[in-house]
Image (cartoon, rainbow, N blue to C red):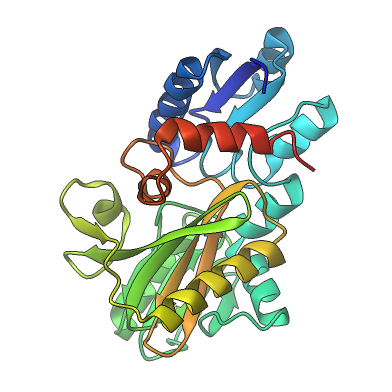
Length: 296
């Protein structure tokens, strides 16, 4: 690919702004090393003005959460006629909404934990042990695992403070696995092992609180099945370019939790780790992501 004028969209207005700032800077540094004319654009309400002024050939989206991962920025770029990295407007919209994505998983026979949808507070736990999640948030924001009625009521109220729609899932015991996707191929599986047992915001972003290992202890057949389910989930939501699929494996069934269309892009994030395990440098990975913006 000839050198392009690339606008890296980062920062933004979501609860994941700080993570996005780091992702965007890492992507920017890589694109500069690759020889592209690159501009960092911190996204706010003047996003359209900034992009119009810069006139990029392509936008590299390093936003996370609302206004970035929910399809809004992609829809705007579609209207402006500017190519961008990652999945389409429609795929981002569905993947970011855990309820919409779970409906697609169920429709297409992809294993996902049993769940109920709540649009407000409701007494009584639907499962003996529950995972409570705001439907439209990322980075483990507002997510809680509970096994008592008292805690359930408190945590449900907290989740509802982030979103009017909440998913309450049956808690699956087993290995928490994450599988990156680059192009049309799954990357090596990572086993997530939080030291306090719950992979929440603190465990995700505090150094030393979680182990990430490639020695998954899965058999060859189990490994292949997890990667197969990963690609089915990715394709059912019509995702493209790159992403990450989170799975709970109880020893029998790989349950898909969610598909992340814009995973972290720092040098220590999980997608770059998996790409490195597959033999790709950070710059190799970014180059593939950028090339994907110009593919059908």
